[in-house]
Amino acid sequence: MKEVYDFLKSARTYYLATAEGDQPRVRPFGTVDIFEGRLYIQTGKSKSVSKQLQANPKAEICAFDGGRWLRVSGTLVRDDRIEAKAHMLDNYPELKAMYSADDDNTEVLYFKDAAATFSSFTEAPRTVTF
Image (cartoon, rainbow, N blue to C red; front, side, top):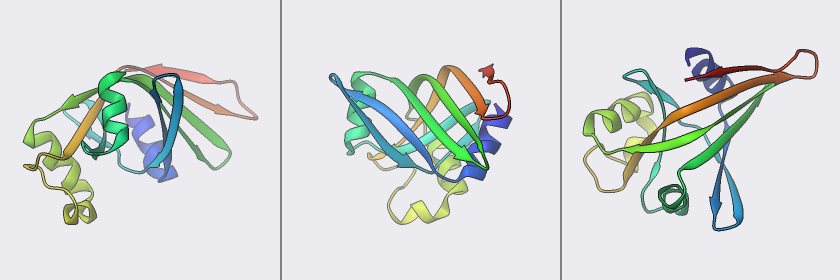
């Protein structure tokens, strides 16, 4: 999981894919954190992406960095604990202007049953699970 985290941090931007009914939805994200041995992302509960994930928690992210790319698929699980939110926000202090660990909007989610595949044009794909 640390290798996945390091890749996403290096890429800086990844794209999160969700489903809204039968319509795929993709948008850029940049937050990633490891907390208590789980890989987390962050959003706001008021956003469409949050509503989509609550209706169908299966998601996939994709990032590209230096000729390699990473796809992570799994189930995103909401963690409403203040400690998980605070950890994320401490790692992204610029978000504290919009979010707070104890507000009703901040949402952190961790990957459950995740499969991460590292790929490039020159190497065979390699998958890790967590």
